[in-house]
Amino acid sequence: MHLKKVSFAKINLFLHVTGKREDGYHELCSLMAQINIRDELDFFFNESGIRVTCDHPLVPEDETNLAHRAAAHFFHACKKKNRPLPLDGVSIHIKKQIPPGGGLGGGSSNAACVLMTLNDYCSILFSRDELMKIGLELGADVPFFIFGSPAIATGVGEKLEKCPNLPDLYLVLCDPGVPASTVAVFKNSVFRLTSGPDYNMNTGLNALLRGQGVEGREKLHNDLEASAFRLYPEIGSAKEEMEFLLQRNVYMSGSGSSLFALFSGPETAGNAYELLAEKWSQGPRKVFLTSLRR
Image 1 (cartoon, rainbow, N blue to C red):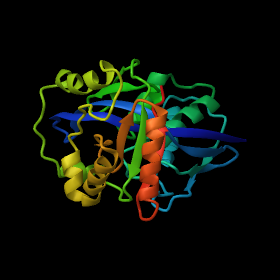
Image 2 (cartoon, rainbow, N blue to C red):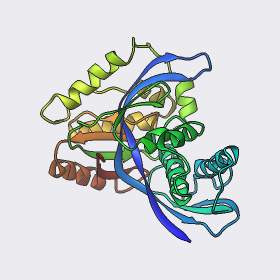
Image 3 (spheres, helix red, strand yellow):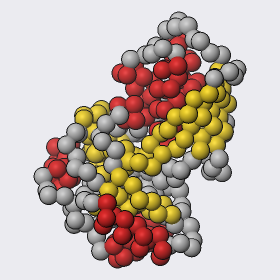
């Protein structure tokens, strides 16, 4: 049997680091939303064992791939609960559009897609909450993609509160052509830790929820930008050039490297996209025109 599925990217509309835990992980407050950039996943169920392939050269095809790990975790969770399975394995092929190492959660989105697809194929062996717990073992962003709605994420990103009132937003997004390491960006960061999620939400949410739409001067923030720019100067250079060309604020998603500008309507976003696409038609930078998923 063959199934086709899609997994969407996400952006962090703002990201604040609010603390550091004893285990070394950082606590965050971030507004996360899925966007209409997606990978395509082909599932083949008449297989034994787990096999993952991908059409992007930077994506591993071994056991370190998050899609591979997600399938392994799912099968392990089934055996642990002594739940019968109607399959012996799965083969997955990923057609990549989400830039790897771009702070857009491509690997986490793939992992969530694998967990949900296998769960559906096996007649809903796990509830959504159970599936989110399995996902958290793979990475802090995985539960968000299973959650399936714009959300305020706290803790290490696993505590999710639905944020249903986001306006329709359009984005021009840039992949600067350099993948960023989440581990390296966090290690290189010097944080002035804020007092908690209320402080962080006030700065970002007010700009997005209480205004009459974004016009490029909203005040959002990502605590990881400074570190990413030190490690990868190409990201900072792309942001400066984007802001100059578009005459509006530009932000980094997650730990980098993707950059985005927000627009209230599709026409102004389309004009900005065409400007950047023409300007950067040669070279490593790639430009996307997209929108939030509600």
